[in-house]
Image (cartoon, rainbow, N blue to C red; front, side, top):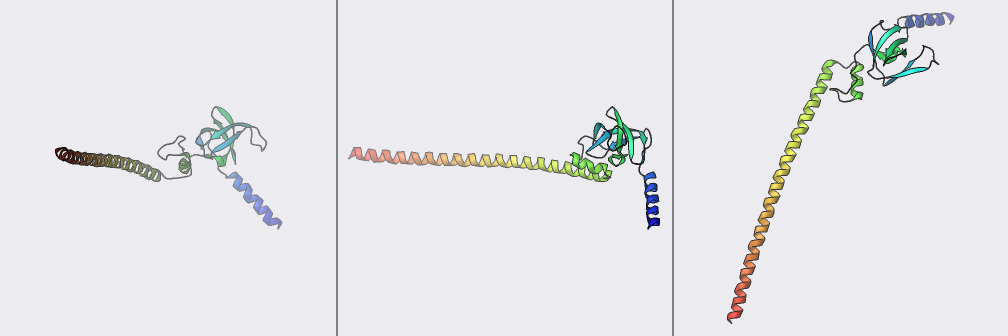
Amino acid sequence: MKKHMLILLVLFSLAATFAASFEKGAKVYVADKTAKVKSSTGWFASTVTTAEYGDVCTVLESKSNKTQVEVNGKTGWISNSSLTSKKIAKENSVLGSIDNLALAGKGLKASAENDLADAQEKIKADAKDAAEKTKEAAKDAGGKAKSSLEETVNSAKDSAKDTLNDAKKNLKKLLDD
């Protein structure tokens, strides 16, 4: 049992030694929605600032699980798990939303981003076409309704004229008798 514990301790030590670290001077990006930048590597260190998704950080020093960075003009330590060396677009771009941008930071391939952008453009074009067709249909329906209304009015006028003419004839007949 003691041998197993010793082996596990050695393995964890080696894992900590080879854990992700970043090269001094490198640009890294915040891969979490928010990440606290602390004054030191300790658990109870005060928070210097909060970095947001996509913020660019300059590496000052890197340890096994924490990296000292300069971000938004402030210096502090941030967990390596909150950082990525992959460039992250901070603003909405072809992907459309921050949620979708998170996919890019987590390894979405450029071809998939391009496919998504193409699909969004097609959807926009299709929506525009549908709006134009709806507008034309409304014009046609409006024109047909107007035409139908004009026909009804003309028919009513004709009917009223006929009724008036019949009344005149009947009145004339009564007067002649």
